[in-house]
Image 1 (cartoon, rainbow, N blue to C red):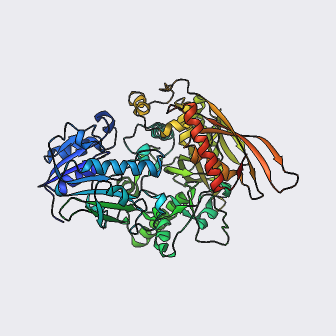
Image 2 (image 1 turned 135 degrees about the vertical axis):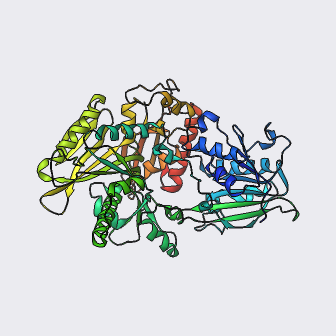
Image 3 (image 1 turned 135 degrees about the horizontal axis):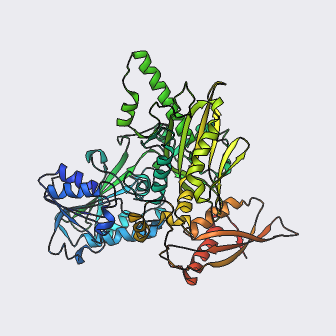
Length: 599
């Protein structure tokens, strides 16, 4: 493939890929564009630096360019490009395959209007989305983005496959939910984490691990550490093929680099003649993306040792980090390598957050450093739909080893109470566990102990639900707002980044719409599967599900259930007609997936 003279990049987020490309192809003219306003783009970590890098290399950066209307863009009028690049296109939120297919089709049709003769179009997709045999595992055609069919709408055909080699572009950083907790993020979840760490740093030394951790755990890891979480709340994962054993092994390790990335690129050519533009598609997968969730699957964790689960807690990975750290210290002692360990950690994967000068953060107890290690990230729970039950949330997990005589739970509880009591959080001791409670959401965190291997020491764990605390500290009306892509949401936190400031809703008095649904179900009926289907079919707009009636058939082994579903959204206009359409979709999925009979 020859080096292109001109490249157009669309759908950029933080412009990190464009910046890397401008350094890789110094002789190429690069035009990088995005859909967002400049002010919104500059909120991304590193965006300003990346934009300057592109411009310093002679490239052009344009904002508010719609990838589906390139021919109508005033800024691009009269220009043609040897290559057009669109990395990981997506409509946003839970938009589904149909909307993303339409996005691809409109992009391809738009793209040929600015493409030079013999030019190329490069589109990167996650593994499985393309719907071709090159995707491993290959999805069902109806469950894919049908890239070949969408490209054919613009007279393009698939002509080749290549890996998406992200390691070539050293500055490349994907944007997405990870921006919640990125260094320069102003998302309320990150602001709450910063608030907690800053407050704890007055009495405790906290070392935050910043390396990436896999989303998947083995069933063995889960059974070892997460006894307190009901296994019915787990999202179980099955390998689709036996030859994915390498992915299984990879998910149990702690990866910090990108050389584990696997994937392909696909080439598309015009179906009419050989001298017309063709397209390249990149498919990306990172280990556990090769697996498809079977969250409603009946599983036997004792018999099936190949099971995986979306992590319901960060505890297993924290235990693994602590184990690796202990083994590393032993190796250093055996080889005589000394040096300032804290300085090395600070310069590698750790971020130190304050603490006492003598390193003893255990409240005056001597003999142990009392250092708290911390990690944060998404965890997943297959929970029923409710006002304050979150299927995914960001957890801040802290762990440290202290003298048992110091009563570390009490000391940590006092620190957390000092920080959170002004916002209505109270401490309740239940079965040796200190629970952090708040109204109206209930449990927002807990402090508990586990054995440290002897009677002298005790291992203390702190688990905090950052999402619920963000709702509480910023007075948000609904936790679902945290996942909003509406720029009006984050704009409120540009100037107001301190907890305690009341959020001003940008959607006033949204309608609450309720519909009843009745159906006959057999003896295999499980309510948790019902909640999972409702959450998916309603696209998260159902905020409450209430069982209002049951009836057992006298002559058949069937039970009639009647539920009331409450539709409510603080981010989108939800009319009666739209809610009814979603409700009809709920009925359809219930009939097709759970084999119930709608009454």
